[in-house]
Length: 312
Ligand SMILES: [Mg+2]
Image (cartoon, rainbow, N blue to C red; front, side, top):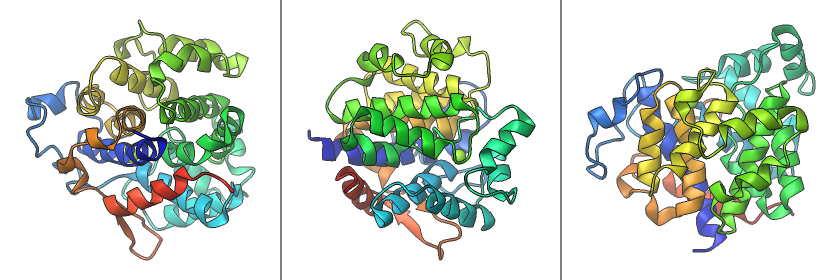
């Protein structure tokens, strides 16, 4: 398997996790396997809670917005990404994070909106920048470790003023970069922990440790630390893409985002053939604010191929 295949599976895998998890958001632990006891039976893209079967949520919608900006500009253009986010938020997407919505609609310019929100609210370590990072992780992988982590932090900072969110997103970028090169992301964690800003190292070392279990989380998994920790746990404690996604959704809580992050990592690691076709067939990513466009799996594959070629 080459890195281009793994890039496709990163983007598609994340969107698949998002769409599978969406109907179970804020539900109890174990709800997914209670409804679908047998892995591989099909029918899991069930819809519900306002979502159509296979419909991806804000996680994947924002990932596509980032992707299209990167591809059209041929580089990281932060005001351009912010503009796309604002246009999308103004069109009334079915779901949008509270913090993201506030930052995108508070009338401040792109380089101040998130920082001002953080100054006022003091809490901005949600998982909303981590959830949308599959596409930028694929794009910047070829630029190397420091460039990909830098880009992750800067894109995260568009909506999240808390450095904790930047660092979690940077860790995700670097784990994907290594997975695209065929390295097991779980085995890369000790190395990658050393690249985190010192003020944030300990909290990530805790949730990314092999002995950590999501039951030990000290915050709801809508926060960046347990979200990333849970995704890594789901990958580490299972043996296939499908099992990893099932484990992620079974945690309950912010199921679409935990499964989207898990799906990115598991996709990069296991590759496209591991993603069940009955999950990709109904998959679709609506783009509110962009002329009623709706990306299906073929378009996501094409997007991932172009992202995989990297900057320049
Ligand atoms: Mg979502």
